[in-house]
Amino acid sequence: MKAKKSLVLILVVLFTMLQCTVLNYLQVFKIKPDILLILVLFFSLYYGRFYALGVGVLCGLFAQATSGIGSGAVVFVYALGGLILAHLTSFIYKQNILSQMLISFIFTFLVYLSLFFTFHLLDIQPPLLNALFFVILPASFYTACIAPFLFYFLKMAFNIR
Amino acid sequence: MRLKWFQNLRPSVQIFVLAALLCVFVLLYLPFSKCVGSLIVSFLSPALSVSENISSNAQDFLAFQNLNEENKRLRGKLDQLTSQLVQLQDIALENERLRGLLSIPQKASYQAQAAIVISKDSSNWTKTVMINKGSVDGICKGATCVFHGSLVGTVIDVTALVSKVALITDFNSKIPAKIVRNREEGIVFGGWWGNSGFCRMKYIQKAEIGDKVITSGLGGIYPKGILIGEVESIAEEQKDKLYKIATVRPALELSNLEEIMVITQE
Image 1 (cartoon, rainbow over the protein chains, first blue to last red):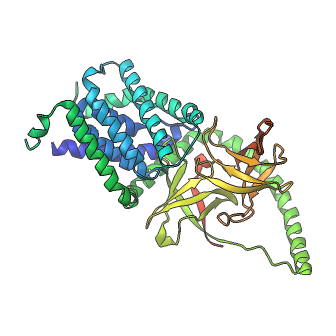
Image 2: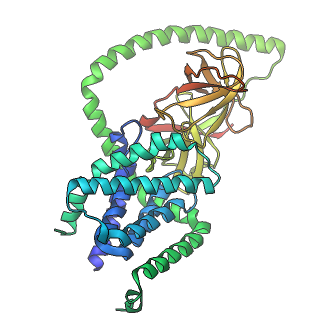
Image 3: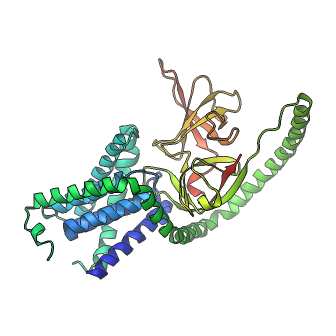
């Protein structure tokens, strides 16, 4: 149990490092996939509510510390998104690549949309259409494309069949 | 075992309890968000520095084949700039002499400190970079960052060893600017558009493609006369609108920054 929790922490740190460095060189139209969100998604789908909440909070904290977004918006949205997904996991088919891509797309889209509306609460008011077409949709699509590969790697790391 | 009472609850109640706990956590976290952020950043900074170095070197290695072509192009540019430099030195001397005749004080110069970019923004929303200098090196919040005389951004967060710089393309950035050719003033701002490596400029009267844009120094945040970029295109004139919009290409390729200079004293 302790080993698993340590592995989770190591993965969060590793994914944060990759997100801040290597993924900047894989940008397409200045957009990169959100692999921290894929981590939240993975633990929500395979490890239930507690892990979803814990990993959501942890990823949110790391994502927020390494980005220019202030306050607790990212922590709240990542963790709540993970929690809700963990609640719905029994209704989700996640065994093939296409369904994994679809779940990742919808999850990223909804989390990013929620973040966008949280920005409005924080008095940052970017235009919706710009955010939708130049950030939310491309980032969701790119994240969805990467997700099955990372799922495969994470399943191997955690010995999930 | 200790959580048996919790597991006996209905799933929807469990979710509600966990969501409530999350809300409490976030509310408690808010006053400490800066401390927590600083701790995480300080903990990550050595690893980020190494990781950024490795990925940057790998990219350089991959770009090696274009080096010859780039070398030729840069040699041509160097010749052109050398002749321009001679002319400018002449003008600078003349300017100094004329200022002396009219008793106009010399323009203020500034002191800057070099810093290395150790990581870039983790999110798709903001455009920031982290540098390896913090408050112990005399960096303070709001300091202007430049590189090769062009504006990079401003320091938005400072910890002891690491600072966060918001680039001029970040959607929070608003820079008082003017066009060099006709002294037309406006505001350069970042945001999310087709290619978010660009900024936009709001102005009132006239700008042309290719015009150089510099900081105007109004507001006292950014020093006067730092190059921001060049007008790339001009949006169609819209009736009944006070402002016109131009797209400004930053003078630097901000996604490939490796070092910057932080202005510590004006």
